[in-house]
Amino acid sequence: MDRLQTMQTFVRVVETGSFSAVAREQATTQSAVSKQVAALEKYLGVRLLARSTRALTPTDDGLRYFEEARRLVGEISEAEAQLRQGERTLSGPLRVATSVGFGLRVLMPHVQSFMRLNPDVRLDFKLDDGFVDLVEQGIDVAVRLGTLADSSLIARRVGTSQRLLVAGKKYVRSLGKKSSLPRVPQDLVDHNCIVYTGLKTRNNWEFSTADGSSVTVRVHGTLETNSSEVLRASIEDGAGIGYMPDWLFSDLLASGDVVVLMPDWQVKPIPIHLISPEARKHSAKVRAFGDHVAQCLQSS
Image (cartoon, rainbow, N blue to C red; front, side):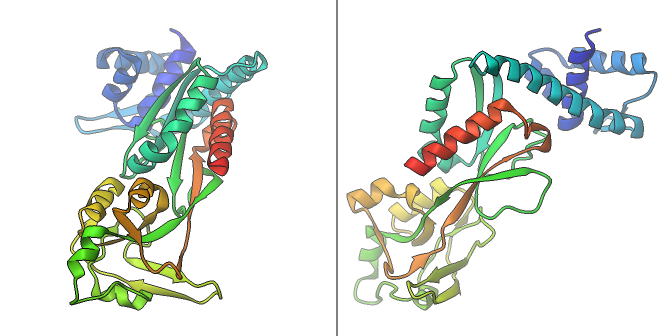
């Protein structure tokens, strides 16, 4: 029995709660993964997992072993990475996650430049507009926009995303003479606003002026979405007014298909963070990726 490999397998089984998920990661069978864990239980002389038709859960002994095993696996991985870094190279897998729109429109070029600088890194780039559990899905580092919830995750602020109040030309034309564009935040209550549900603020839109005065307006509309791409398409099609990062509309603003509303009012920017599980805080690859992304975002 390869004790290190078996320990790594057990750690991932507990993190994912599934033999089949780990089998897919290792390109092997569910039976082979189950046999590895059974061999580890026999070697240790304790039951590590409680198995049922619905779930796999660690026993008390299994949970204690998992915590130590996860720490040891991480330390061994980083010891190897530091040796390789001494040779000026990074290698091996790196799992990165972010939202679909930001990943496609902002982060992807920086991911590609990182890969060109580190050709031995095998990068798994996960794009998802829903909640991603970093530990459960084995993510090394995620890029998240917005205010972070309190958690045990390690966070590093790497930039800021500016937001704009925008509308498509089709929406502007649809108003005609019966209504006017909003000039102050309170006017937004009379307009169809498209709400992005991926942020905590949702339909509470905050504005401020150069003199420091601020106001928050609770807006309403006929469409809510957790997809920035759906919001972009809806704005372009004239469905309503949006309150989103400038990078989502840069090309449409340049072409004139989308216009900025209430330019005298400033919109609160969104912080950009890199977050990682506690076990990955000393990872050379995570650190190198974070430094690269921070530099790219600050220079763009």
